[in-house]
Structure formats: C-alpha cells, structure tokens
Image 1 (tube, rainbow, N blue to C red):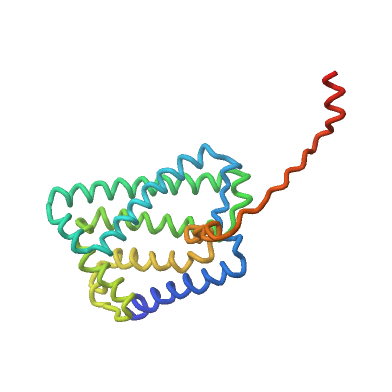
Image 2 (image 1 turned 60 degrees about the horizontal axis):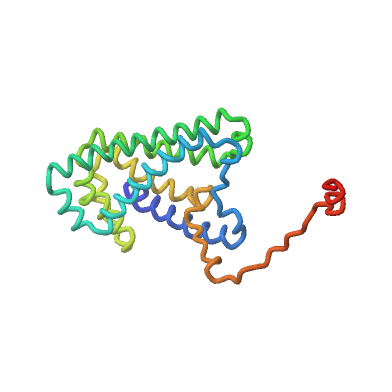
Length: 231
C-alpha cells in the first residue's frame, strides 16, 4: 500500500502534469490563461487575490529553497529563536492564504456574474487548494518545528523520486495528517494541467522571438458630419 501511495501517486501526477500540460499547450495554446474575471467584479477579488498570492507564493518559495539548499536551511534553522520566528511567520502566512482563498470561494459562489463563468474544474481546484492549505496549517500548528524535520523527511523523499530511487521509509513513519498533506500536493500537481492553474507555466517565450506586428487603426467617425457640427 505504501508503494502505491508514495511511489505510484507521485509518478502518475508528474506524468499527467508534464504530458497533458505539453499536449494542452500544443493543441489549445490559448487556454494557457488565468481567465481573469476582474472586469466582472474587482473589489472582493482584491481582498482574496492579494492575501492568497502573497501567502502561498512565500510559503512555496520557502519550501523550494529548503529543498534546493538543505545545508543552508539547516544552518539557518539551527538557532532556536530563528526557528520559532519561522514557525510563527509560517502559520501567519498559511492563515492569510486560507482567508484569501475563502474570500475567492465566497466571491465565486455569491457573485452571479463570476459564478456563471466558473467551471466545474474551477470549483474542484478551489476546493483542492483549500484542503491543502488547511492541512498545511494544521500540520504546522500540531506538529511543531516542521521547518526542521522537513529536511529529514519530505525533502529526501521528493529528491529520491527525482532520482528514480524512492525512499518510502522516510515518510511512511510520519503521522497520517502529514502524509496526506504531502500526497495532496501531488494530487494538485495532477490536476494542474486540467485547470486554469496551468497559466503559471505559460512563460511568454514567443514574445521574445516573434517579430512585432503592425496594428491597423481605422477611424470610425464621420469627419464631414463632425466638421458641420463644429460650424
């Protein structure tokens, strides 16, 4: 069972993210968009997007930094005071992300115009993201000092997946809430190419190599009529 959970699910999610993502880019490139609905309603959107993006981007950046530079991160968290500050800030960022996501969820449900343009996959993505950030907050609050034990559990496991030599033992002994949080991250990765979340991978490379095109502007007013009005 552990092999299915900690080997099968991650590799299936990676396969879907890469293969389906490239296929969607090749077949339906214009769908690589966030499909912003800001023109429908922007006030509530602001209070949802800002805390959500600032919170989740910072959290993901810290996770990635610790994964890429474990030695540097271990030295940084070796000081108890710094570790305590990281834990408190992490909880605050997670709470901010939850608040922002809840606001976005309410906006989609309560605003008629935003609700009309919201697809089933949009709702599924919002629910999946909300589950993940709530679980992340729960893990950080209940199982303290995750900034430190992350280096000896989740990070080696993910690295072993990339090197095609999965180390199941480092995560199979973790509490089920932590395991679920780790696996749900791969569930989101599997959903990634099927949702509007894929827009974060749409780097505007074409704009760097394409030639600028001319824009034709046609004057649509009756100049003669306008001239007589002025007289």
